[in-house]
Image (cartoon, rainbow, N blue to C red; front, side, top):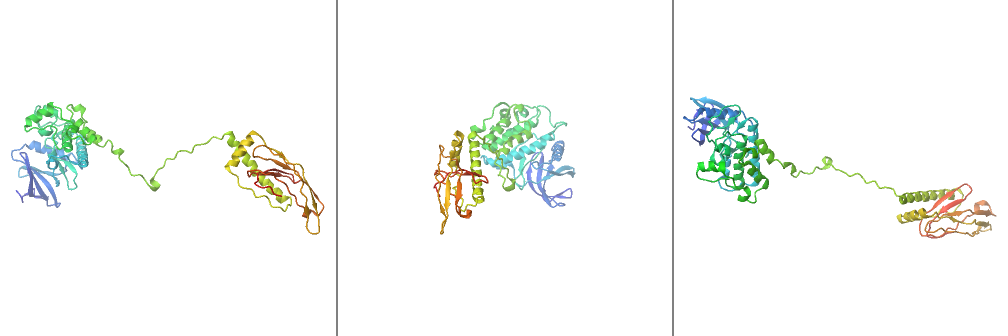
Length: 434
């Protein structure tokens, strides 16, 4: 009764549930100051079964399985102290006859499968999995409870062959036939639970328990899509495979269920890394082959650049007072022209030697321009060779040497000089100056 203290420690507060086998109370652990669920055996119930449940619960420790805190006997009656799960049962959430939200269905199914995987790995089969045996803790996490008719590998059973155990609405075909239950039997019960979460109804419906048992044993369940066409295909497929009549055609155990549920979690969208965490894959730069035309263009460009440098040295080294001509920059069009013309023919222009006689007067020196003979090669490339002969009648400082350059449309100059002031010039200028 409420107010009673069990084993000098657990004070009964209010009843949570009662059945033919046991009664469950909300109690307070006076030593630890926490709420617990205290389960006591009914006076005429099977003591062995109660002890079996306690051993099964003690063998498991998992976030999705109700924890066992204590076991003992008081006044000749055994009791067990369990984790108090305050958020109700899955049966209560399904009582409205409507499907759960798909996100809730996926989460709850994954948590149930995780708990089953832990139990099956330790050789324990629940054999009575149903929504009433799935409770939720304060954080909303699903936990499997009531291993009262569980079977542990390597131990005897509580029933003889041919005895049917389990809720009729979730019983596996092999259990309905009186055959031993294995991990695949829990998988079938899981399939019926998942079918109900997705559709809001059971795969088989009857007001007669024995008729339900027969239907689970002999009839094929409807597909999830036939009841709810918009159900998530992946969850629907898992429910249908778990409800296969042949245990060999179902996922083998809780671990297989969990793997199926989590199969495409790795395909979920992952936030891209930023900053130093980001990894970039760069394609190697494509190496371009050098064609003969490209090589010719490069050679012509180097020739022009070398000539310009030589002309500058010659103009400064020869003592000429005239500034070097200002050349416009090279363009891609001029390089292409050089490449085309240079590959076809080598343009040469030979200028005749020009004699310039510089006259000296009292006011300023007079410069006489020598006639220049120019032979221009085809296209736009010109190679002009000039060998001037300068005769000075005045002091050498007053002498001025002028070279008449041919008019062209592009700006390219290559000059080479030697100490005797002989210049070889390739030029393209927009004007002809003195």
